Length: 414
Image 1 (cartoon, rainbow, N blue to C red):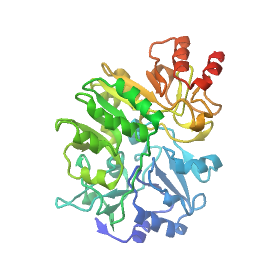
Image 2: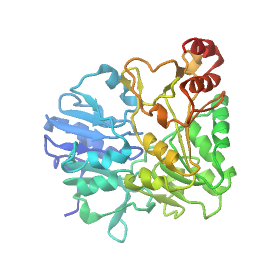
Image 3: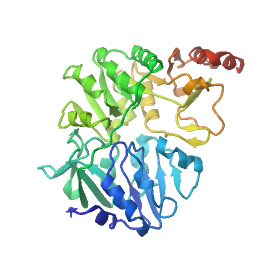
């Protein structure tokens, strides 16, 4: 039966030895996290699991490696030092694509969710709360977890779509008025703007478009309003969603799993029927996405070799990101009639120290997107079309969009 409690009482309900699942993206139940750290000594064999968090990972500050172990299926910049440390007592990585996550995290699955913490809106008059800015896998997690704890935040918008959870499906609620997590996409420089222009040139009229978050995707989102009939179908959308919707007809459709921006974006999406929030089972179902015509997938990479293999996860053996939903969307675009799949990235690292187009992937790195799934690659120097091309042709295309500083070296490697 649903009960309002203080955060420390909610922590006390979690059994040692459990798998405890935390929310990701901008869902950041800080009152629970603070109580979790203060009471960490009650655990000696806990496993904490989550995907990408755009928050501060404060739950890792105390007890990691002694009181609990952390498993994640999506690395983040704030975890890089842990992955470099490579201490198996502290952190481990689960390679999984998001379309498979519901099968991985379930009763009887590889990760059995004994306890779950989510962040929601305050209770509504119909006896429900809304998952607000972070739907993603959370609806599924609620249906699978033995114990459900909700931090109910007065700043969380009530979003439209499949976002509601009945209070009777929650065991304990924590009331909060903490500020929601803010995600800053950063400034786009001149190099980024060139990439944005090339990306937009490949988006056809009436397309359904997917992309991630960051400076380049956010500027692409802002520019999509200039293309006729564009709709959005994505796992995460950021700040320029407001600009896009303000500049497009009311018939424009937006289907999305997570929001990442500032409070103005979150408030804009409160009870906004133009933004349909949906779970992973819808946002990453590539069989259904492939039926959208044309479907356009826009993702990024850390490096791409001259065969067209893409590494979007590691620098050498160090985990920097995760599989995420990129391959789900790439497959959908390849199967969609008239679909377009784009990998967009700068041609070189900061200061032009290293080329991101390489003769072969670095030792210890991984293949996130196989060469036979890569369609278009974009840098600030242009567009490489790889689909159906021979290995020689692929190399020529990729060298042509590499930073000029590295082109001779790349040409001499083949």
